[in-house]
Image 1 (spheres, rainbow, N blue to C red):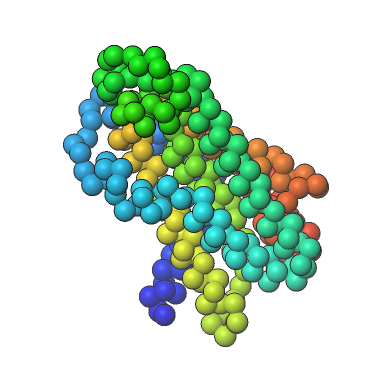
Image 2: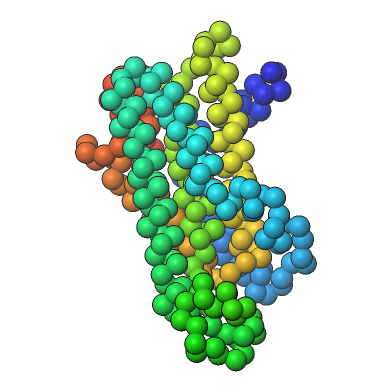
Length: 262
């Protein structure tokens, strides 16, 4: 338990800082541009993380929204109820997860449509031998072809959005004070460790995507959509009265504005 406490203390002290929320978007943009330039100018040798079948990619990144959703749901519910005691406010804040699901679904569907309408089927990744008879990605792959279109990086989008959403929600820990005797202490501590670990995985795999996969323009658009999804909600809409609201920043019943008004 002492090891868990120390781990939670480190993650809590790191990720709840206003500086992290302020500079993480710029850090991700820097990783994306720097990693992409490195990929183009001086590619790194192949490694375990460059293999799409690596454990982090298969079991975490490909279901990144599911991980983020499942850990944020109890975290938002418990911390909001602990601070406000109002079920209505808990439900209001949990609606951020429905908004996030909508952002994820709309963006991934849009990316798939863009790849479909800009793509063509070829015999191989070398883009030789156009196969005119295949007019969809699924049909092309089913016949052993290679579909080439403008493939906006879904990893860049989702990892950006999930990492930024987690650090926004963890800002509530400035107000959540529990000692070991409190009945919620162990649960919140475990959730802090889980969310903090996810955040580091998302940032690491975002960097791996920048270094090993996609071209620069595909990663630029993917990252841009992630930033727009985050800023459009936490930076704009959630500061309005008729919205899910920002995480509670005091033990009062009002949802206070966060660092955007500082």
